[in-house]
Image 1 (cartoon, rainbow, N blue to C red):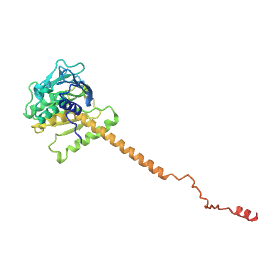
Image 2 (cartoon, helix red, strand yellow):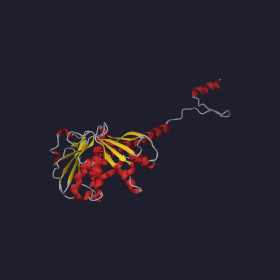
Image 3 (cartoon, rainbow, N blue to C red):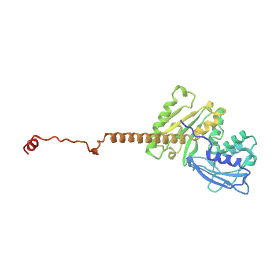
Image 4 (cartoon, rainbow, N blue to C red):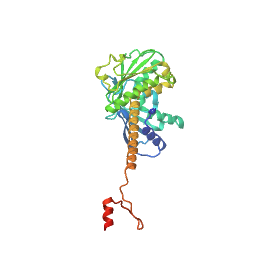
Length: 324
């Protein structure tokens, strides 16, 4: 299984190249889109080469989610805690984006290792922003508490117009994903993949992993969810997160894996589909080769000048030849 990286590789490479060439005044204007419709825009001007503007557009939130000022709740606090003084939040953001950050690259720490880790964190802005509500819930789980103003059922956006649900409690947090796929083949492969995923969790080697369940119908935890949010053609997947799963450094990994679970499944479904197509093409090619070898050779062999050919005559032809 391949896990997606929390940072944007292109954004990290752009930041590293810019930091290594701060003395050169260059103009940058990059646009790109990553999975789940997260869009980025990076700008650097010739007049101020030490300042980089990073704009991020998030997936369109469905009605059941809670966005404050165009961002998930807790995102502003998470950005300030993660980046400190080198990042300034511009209000309002650039048109068409949910967030615009102003990075002063001259304020980066001189230590190379610390500077690189900070750039990786900046390149992980998607995780910081979209994962802020989930991180807040799991931090309370680590202390076995629930935030006093927290709803009993939370909807968090993870794909355009799609959400997953949290049921926070003091001793555990239940995470439920309605799994939706547009293509019928993807739906069949995802259903099989998720059922095997649940079976794999029951092996002895994965006793410490979060319990995992799959159901074709909405689980009991979603009884208060709106009906339009419960349409899922590949069933529902539930994880139960306990305090041991969010202790120390496990928190960051748990937040990222839960935030991108649907993308993780979709990635492996596409890989499985591509692998099967490759196997099918190889099988067809081998069958074509076998058929080609079985074809008779229709070309007549060229006769040499000294070669002789014989024809078997019938009895009548033999008698006729003897009389002549």
